[in-house]
Length: 330
View 1 (cartoon, rainbow, N blue to C red):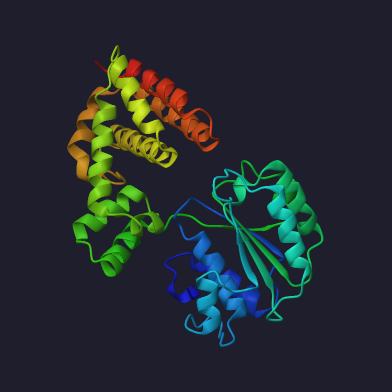
View 2: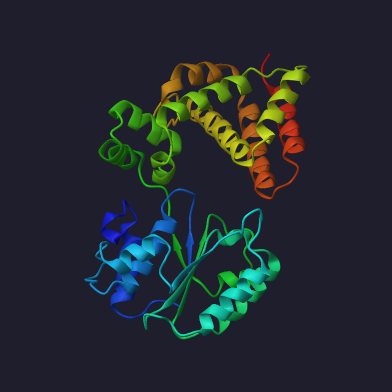
C-alpha cells in the first residue's frame, strides 16, 4: 500500500519520506502505538517504497515489486512473528534472522525485517537481537512493531528510532467506513466511536454483529450482583475459553465504565463511545458511586495486563468479576 493510501499519521509518514528521500533512514525503527492504528501497514509501505523501481517519493503500489512486498513474497522483506502454537518470538528465530541478514540482498537494496509484535520477544530473543542492533549489516533495516514498551529491554529501545502512532479521529474513522465499507452514516458513527479511532479494528469487523455482541456482554456483566456466585463462575468460564474474547470483553467493560465516568463528571454525552446505549449509561451514572467506577477501572487495567501475560485466565476473570459484583449497587 502506498503512503498516499494510508489514512492519518501524516507527520509520521512525512518524516519517513524525508528520511528515505535524503538517504537518512535509521537502521532500526520502533513503530509504537495501540493495536489497529496501521503500524504494520506503514512498515510494509516503507518496505515497498524502498524497493519500488518506479518510486517518486512514494511506491507505485502496482508493479511486481510492490505486489510481492504486499503479499509477503519479496525475498528482501521478511516478517518475524510467533510461530504456530507459540506465544513468544524465540532466540532461535532471532539467530535465523541474523544469518539471513548476513547475505547480500537480492535486489541490491535494503534487507528489511519486520518484527511484529516485537513486545512478545522473550528475554533471550531480545538479547540476541541486540547484537544486530549494535552492529547491523550495512544494508539491513529492522522495524519493530509494538503496542507497548513494557516488555522491551531498555537496551533494545535505546537503539531504535521511535515513531509513535495514535488513534485517528472518530469522525475520520466514520468517514472512511462510509466510503470504503458502505455502512450507513449512523452505524459508521457508532462503530467509529466504539473502536475509539482504531481504523483497523473498525474495518475488520462485522458492524452489526460486533455491536450486538458488545451489548449482550455488557448487559450480562452489569447484571452481576453480590452472592450471584453461579452467574460469576459461568461468565468467567465463558470468557476464559478464548484469550482474544476475554480481552475484547474486558475492553468493552472498560469502555462502558469510562462512559459512565464521563457522563457522571460532565453530564454530557460528548466523547461517549457507546453512543447507542446512552440511556443505560445515564441510568448507571445515577446509581454508581464515583469510588466504585474508579475501582473497576483500576481493576480492569490490572486484568488486561495479566491476560496479556498469559496468566490463568479463569482465575483472573473470576477474581475480577467477584470484585465487581461485590461493589455493584444492589
